[in-house]
Length: 301
Image (cartoon, rainbow, N blue to C red; front, top):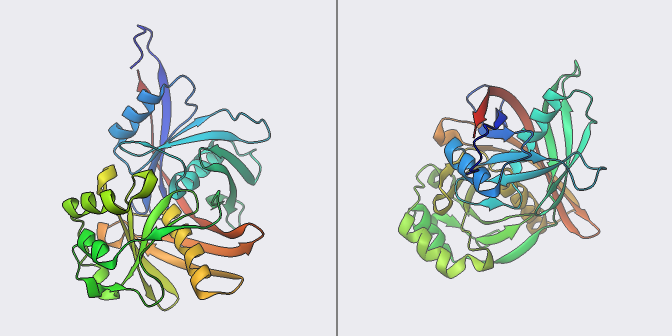
């Protein structure tokens, strides 16, 4: 921490994302303005908040953009994440109603475009973001390894549409389809995660496992990242965006849209709206949903 004797005060808000109900969805803490915080302080604050992610809003390097946004989980900085961007946009717009309807955030993974969502009475109720990168398929993970990580049997993993796949639209996840009844039985096995990370995580060193089941027009999902301190995540926008892009690639066509329900097993149901479409540079995806403000406070350092 900073050795100066002068007390520095930083404000934050918390937002529940992908929900219309307080204490539902996925919470994110947003520190703004975060000017003056060091990298170590940001990481320490993210660990102290103990959410899956915390964001820090800084001035943009390009004045055409609205902010530079840094995202930290409990143990490391992330190049991109979905629900933190949605929650950060909602928080900034609530604090400054004069912001344009489309915001641009500078992030490690690239420029993130965010569109504010409004109610029929013009109240800001949420946001939709465009993932910063087109779909990248980064490799296959054996169904046996996925099953071990999730405490499931190998035949619980569905491989008819695609093998478990490392995929990214800004940050990578292992995406695996499972039988609908198996989804609720999944429990992360830390030893299996460590073994799979050694063998299949690639250069990123990350192993975040996103399990999903297709149930008519809706997808149900769970995400586990115990090696990063997130035993389970209530709503994972970046993983869902990668899934939307992957499913369009697998199913074919020019575009698709669907909803994902996540976080049910945690008691924090979250509804994410997904879109994917073919573009000149590949398959692009967008994630949107509603938000609810929860807490506000200050931290003295």
